[in-house]
Amino acid sequence: MYPKKLEKFLLKVQKPGRYTGGELNSVVKDKSKVDIRYAFCFPDTYEIGMSHLGMKILYSLVNAREDAWCERVFAPWTDMEAVMRENDILLYGLESGDEIRNFDILGFTMQYELSYTNVLNMLDLAGLPLRSKDRTSLTPVVIAGGACVCNAEPMAEFFDITLPGDGEEVTNELIDLLKEYKAKGASKQEFLQAAAQIKGVYVPSLYEVEYNEDNTVKSVNPTCGAPEKVEKRNVADLDSMFSPSEFVVPFLEVVHDRTTVEIFRGCIRGCRFCQAGFLNRPLRRKSPEVVEAQCKAICDSTGYDEISLCSLSTSDYKGLEKLITNMLPWTIEEKINIALPSLRADNFPKELMEKLNAVRRSGLTFAPEAGTQRLRDVINKNITEKEVLTTAAQAFSGGWTAVKLYFMIGLPTETEEDIEGIANLAQAVVDEYYKNPDKPKGKSVSVSISVASLVPKPFTPFQWEPQDKPDVLIEKQNYLVSCVKTRKVNVSRHVPWTSFLEGVFARGDRRLADVIETAWRKGCKFDGWAECLKPDMWEESFAENGIDPYFYTARRREYDEILPWDHMDYGVTKKFLVNENKKAHKGETTACCREKCAGCGANKLNGGVCDEIGKTVV
Image 1 (cartoon, rainbow, N blue to C red):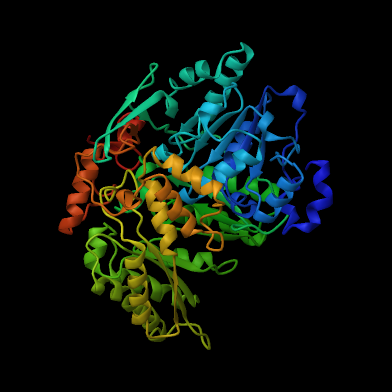
Image 2: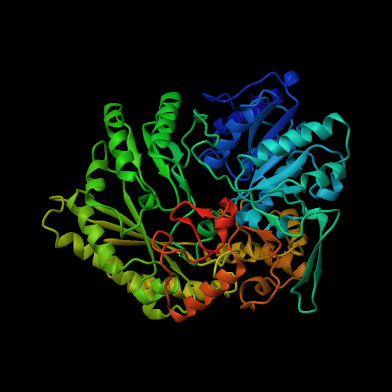
C-alpha cells in the first residue's frame, strides 16, 4: 500500500515496485487493534534490504505479536526522493502507506558505515528532527541494531537507543517496556532511563564523553544510573530462538533472490581482520533437524528454488554432510538448489561437492585473503596454498569451471611480495585446471579475484592498526593488476575512497556527528554507491568542522588508549585482542576454537560454556 497521491508519479521513477508494497506474505493488520507500530528501516535500496536476513527475522518476530505491527521502510532512490520532496510526500510504511513519523518505533539496521547519511535522509524525509535531543516526545523512539552499533559513537547524537548483539529477545523486551510507558504517559527521558537497565540496550544520551588535548578519549561517564559497561545481548539456544516460517516475496529481483536460513552464529577461526567473527562469539549452532525443517517451511511458503545455508564459515558447521544428505531427496524432487556461501578451502570435502551437483552447479567461492603464507599467518588465516589448490582441483574434477577468490590489501606488515602473491595464487589455480585430467571437456576456466581494502574495525586484533591512505591503496591495486599475466584471471577492486570513509566512521567518536550532518546537508547520501559518492563534499565537511579524518584512520593507537567503544562489552576481552595483535606482528598463529580454547572470554555470555568444546577457560 502506498499514499494515494503518489500513484500518479510511480511510472516516472525507476522500479516502482520498490515503493508499492502488497507482496506475497507481507503482513497487514488493523491498526486500531495494535498498541505498538514498528517501522523497520533499512537505509539502502529495496533490493538490498529485501536480501537482509536480519530484517526478515525481526519483521516476522514483531508481527507474531498481536499487539504490534511491523512495516518495512527502505531508502528511496534519488529519483523517488525528488518526487516525494516536490510533492510533500513523507516517508511511509510499505504495508499501510501511513507516515512513519506517527509510528512508535523506528528501527534502523546498521550494517555498513556508508549508510549513515541515508539514516539522516530518511529521518528528514519522515518529517522528523535529526537529533535525538530535538525529538522530545516519547514516540517515535529511534533505535538501531546491527554490526555498526558496536561503535555507535559517530551516530550517537541521532539515535535514542542502540542494541548491541542479538535482537531476537531484546526487541520484544523493548516493545513491552514502551507499551507500558506509553500507557502511563511517561516522558521520553523516563523511558530511556528505564530502557538502559535492559541488558543489551545502550542509550547514548546517558553517557558523557571527555577528550584529552590530543583529541583521544579521556573518559566515558554514565549518568542517571546507566551501566558503566553495556553488555551485548546473546541468544544462547538457536534451536528454540524465534525463526520465521515465511518471508515476504519481492515483486522485483533483489540482490539475493533466494531463501536464506542461518545454521550457526559465531566462528571458530579467529581471522584477525574479521569483525563479525569476534562480535558474534561464542559459537552457537542449530541442529541439522531444525535447519532442515526451517528450510522446508520457507520454501513451501515462498516458492523459492534456491536455499542459502548462511553462516560466517559454512563448511565448519558440524553435521553439514548429514544436513545436505537429508535435504537432497526433497530438494532434488522440487528442483531446489542448495547454496553454501562462506566456504573454507581447507575443509570442503569432495563427497559434499559431488552431492551439491545434484540439482545445479553454483559458483564456488573461497577466501584465501592473502597471497603469501607469511601474511596468512599474520592475519591468522590458517589455510595453505596447497589446500586451496587441492580444493580447486576437486572442484574442476567435479565439473566446475569458475572459481572466485577473495583477498585483502592493506594488511599489517604487507609487502609487494605479498601483493604479487595474490596474482601468483590465482595463476596457480588456473594452472591447476589445465593439468587436471578430469576437467570439463571443451570449456575454459575463469578465476575471479575480488580485492577489498583492509578497514581496521573495533573489537578485532587490528583495531589499533593504521589504515592505508587512498593513494597508497591505488598504488597497490595497480601493482596487483600489473602482476596478472592471463585473461583467465579477472580482478575487481574496491573504491579506496569508500574504504577510507568507512574507516573514519568505524573507529570514530561523537565529534563526527557534525561532519555527517554537514555532509548530508551538502547532498551526500548513498555513499556506498560509486555513482553517488562525493569525496569533495566530504573533504569540505571535515574541514568546516575542524576534523582531521586521518586522525581516525592513519595513526597507530597505543594499547592503553581509551577507545571510543571501550564502554561496550561484546564478550571478547581487550587483553585477548592485544595478545592477538602482538602475535600478528610476530607472524604467530592461534589455533581454531575446535582445536584449543584461546581464552577470548566470550564464553561468559553463555554461562562459561562455548558450543565447540564445552567448558572453556577464561
